[in-house]
Structure formats: C-alpha cells, structure tokens
Image (tube, rainbow, N blue to C red; front, side):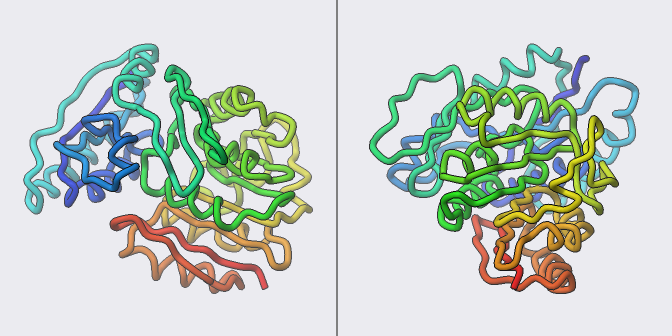
Length: 314
C-alpha cells in the first residue's frame, strides 16, 4: 500500500502543537525528525541546532481525503499563531517509508540507563546500560516522542523486579521490551493496529525477550479503535480476570479518559499506572477521569508541554 507523507518544519515553540494535530488526524503517532544525531547532544545537555521536521502519514486506500482536509485546516490555523511554512506532501511506497526512517532515526539515551538503538546501527553497551534495538517498520513509538520518553523514564524508576506489566497501545513494542529488560516478570502488550502488533512481535524477538513479553491484537473498553477487551484472534483471559502490578498507556488524552475505569480494573491492589500522551492543558481532564475511576494520582513527569501522570490503585 502507498502512503501520503505530510511534513512541516517547526521550531521548539510550535512543535508540540503540530504533533498534537498530527496525532489526532494522522495514522499513529507523529514522527519527529531532528537535523543531527541527537545522542551526543543529549549526553551534554546542549540544545539541538536547526529546525525540527514533524511528519505524519495517511494510507492511500480511499480513506485519507477527510483526515487530509482536517490536517490542512489545522495547519492553516496554527500558521496564524506560529511562523510555520506550508506543509510538504510526498507519496511513498511502504518500503520507501521504512528507508526514510533510517535517514533521521539515531540512537538516543532516555532516563539514566536506557539507550534506544536502531537495528542498522552498531553500538557497544556500556556497563549498566539497558540497550533496546528497534526496527520501527510501519508502527510508531521509537522513543523520539516526548510521551514515549516520559514513559521510559517512569518505567525505569517505578518498575519493581518480577512485576506483571500491561502495555496498552504498544506501537513498536518499545515500552514492553523496556519493561522486560528492566526486570519485569511478564508483559502483555496490546495494540488495536494489526501492523503495530506485527512490528512489536518482531522487536520482541530481536531483543530476546519473547519468553516474558506477549503481544496481542486488542485494547481495553473505552479505546476509540477497539471497543472490546479481547483480542480478535482469541479471548484474553488475563484481561477478563487478571490484575497487573503496573499498567502503562501511551495514547491520546481523550482515550485515556474514556478507558480510565478499564485501566483501574486491570490494576492489582497497590498497582501503579503510567499514563502519557497528554499535554499540560489536558492534564486536569485526565486527572479527573483517573480519580473518578478510584485511582490516586501520586506524581507526574513533564517534558516541555507533554505530561505523564503516575497513579496508584489503593
């Protein structure tokens, strides 16, 4: 299948607004490309030089006309506020899309120990580093986006050895793999997109954690893509009866709010929830939904305008 790539250059002030728009109407999460290998800049805390390119993709399967119109209208409104150039459009075959990733996707450090390395780069792990090797494929969630980075950092500080973990909206599987590499006893990773499920399964195999990570096609009640808490190929007994020590969900704020009750139902007593995918202006809405579901919001992390909330089942 061919894809339509929509890209726009944005400075640090505008990039969050463009990402939110692209997340809302594009396929999967927005892609953020930096002009240089950002690994060395992260090590010394320097600011990245040059503009950031934000991209999203629409499948050219007859369903893209309305979301494309919404994206163009949204960018027009943003240009009334920010100095954004006109968006660029490019038609890509699926294989070309995968190659486009490799031009800008570099290894990076997240938190204290995690290093995300694309499959095509060589890297020798240093002492105590947790290295995750990824091939993004046609899924999203590489660690480039602040919401993914916030989740990884929260996992690093919150995950207890041997914990059971549920990853809702796994994308490339980066959070599920990270949880396993950080010491989780078992991880169930769900995604409503069958393409993401296939990519996540491959990344689980590449990182040698298939004995602890199960990837399935499904979601929780309240998800806007899949309304049932079963996989399409078979019932998920763990989701119907089981409880998890830690649940991580990195999706859009309205979806988190809608599925708050289901997220709470999946937490064991004393279990923790990491919820990301929201900007600071959406924080109170999500907090209210989590509290209404009986959860106690116990902490937060923030990177620029993006927020991750940490909640607990008492």
